[in-house]
Length: 361
Image (cartoon, rainbow, N blue to C red):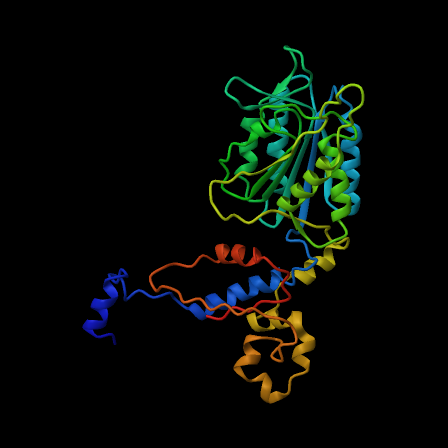
């Protein structure tokens, strides 16, 4: 029981008006978050997502030849990453409404927290008078158009993580930053300039090559992918002969479309070929302790009966400390509610490859 003096001192720095309210069943909360951590780790090679659905967009009347790079990107995503891809052509008639309807179907069929949605567009683009992103079939005044700034908001409100690749002029004008979830975009160029056409200088060409290279390594963030694509694009140098050769490449732009700070990034990695085996490996075991120990069962088998009952063994499947560890202790204020989803998201954003994790309340 705290004395009046203690309460008076505490009240100077903390609100104690509801000191009688405590975090309910903190031990159960710790067990639940531990199960979530066991499902997320080890994180060295496993994808964060159960499925990745890709919608590759181009115009039905494609005069730029983007279908060549689009098809190659489709092959990389479907064969090397095992994503479920679909090519869809925007019709010349009723273009905006047709694409809006297709996006609504796409979201209805595939939106889930465990899924990643990926949208790619290759074609013409420009800004309107309000500096908003417009897609167009051709560069003529009477060309069919799509008001992309109005459709992108549907993706930003999705429960799924969303990744958007835009290979068009004025691509960065699509940055509206109104999303509630994790939505990220890599634009082929800034809002004020043009994008290189199909060929060795295009954004899509560098994107395809870097995705091929990164498919052999661990999961990588969209920020890292942007860095790799930018490095590849920057590597080419204009050649100077009798006449100055103009710069043929443009700087791609990485944008995180969210109003909240410290949002985690979308991560990409190949999905396992056998989805059934993947779902078994990702499913949490019964009980918090068994779920964590499943990733370090070899270490547990090495323990004798006395050690296995110690507090150290309860906290770590590896009490002999054969693996490097970081121990973080967090003291919580009493008067607050804890949201499991936020903790799970925070744990998954740990900036390291994690073998296992344990949380105790």
